[in-house]
Amino acid sequence: MFENIINKIAKKIEIANNHINKDVLKSLIEYDGPFSKEINENYKISEKLNIPLCQDTGMVEFFVFLPKKSIDLDIEYIINQSVIKAYTSNNFRYSTVKEPLFKRENMKNNSPAIIHYFFHENKNIKIKFLIKGGGSENLSALYMLKPSADKEEIKKIIKEHIKENGARGCPPMNIGIGIGGTSDKAMILSKLALTEDFNERNPITEYSDFEKELINDLNDLRIGFQGLGYGKTVHSVHIKSYPTHIATLPLAISIDCYLVRKGEVEIEL
Image (cartoon, rainbow, N blue to C red; front, side):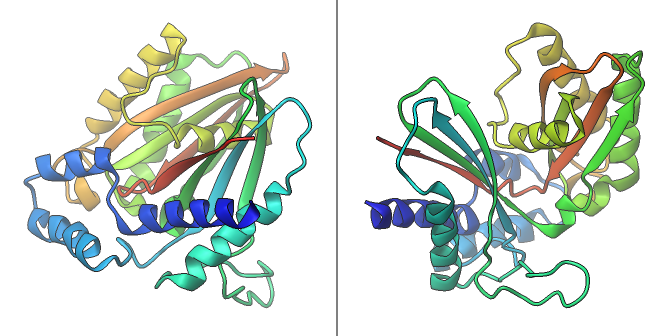
C-alpha cells in the first residue's frame, strides 16, 4: 500500500514540475507582450521532452488534511519517500540543504519536505502540495499589526510590498494572504491560500470582495510579465483568516511565481 501511495504522489510532483498548470496556460496564451514567444515555447519544450519548466525545481511544501479518527499510516515517511523518488528519478535539481547557516550541505534528494497537518470531516486523507522556488519564497513577509488596523491599512501594506519586491518574484504572481491566528499560523494560512485555483474565492463575502479589490489594485501596479511592465502583475489573490488574540492582528504574505506548480492527491482509507 505504501509503495502505491508513494508512486502516486511522486508522479503528481513530476507532472507539476514538467507540465504547465491549466490556469497558467490560459494566462500565457493570452499574453502578447515582450518575450511572449519565448515564454510560450518554454512550456511546449517541457511538455514535449518531459523536462522541468524551470531550473529551480523548488522545495516541496505539503498540506495534509487528516480524518479526525486515528489512522495507522506513517504520512511523514510516505511524503518524504515520494519526494525522494520524484527528484532522484527525474532530471530535477536538488534544492534542499541539510544545515541552513554554516555548512549548507546539499541533501542530494530534495528531502525533507515541509509538512503542515490539518483535520477535516472527510473519511479520506487529502494531500495538497506546492513546489516553491527560492525566488518567490524569499519575498514572504510577516507583519504584526495593531488590532485597530483596518482593511485599507492592510491593503496599503500588501501593495507596497508587491510594488517594492514583486518584479523579483517572477510575475505574474499568485498571492496568498493569511490574516489572524498567531504569527506562525498566519504564515501557514498564506501558504495554504496558494493551493487554491485562480477563480476560487473566499466563502465570506467581505474577504471575497477584498480578494477582488487586491487583484485589481495589484494589477494596476503594472509590474507585468517577468517585470517587463506589460500584461498581468498577479494571476490571483486568496485570503485565509483565523481567530486571533484581542491584542494582535497578524498579516502574512506569501508569493508563488508565474508557474504556480502545485498538485493534489486523495488517499482512500
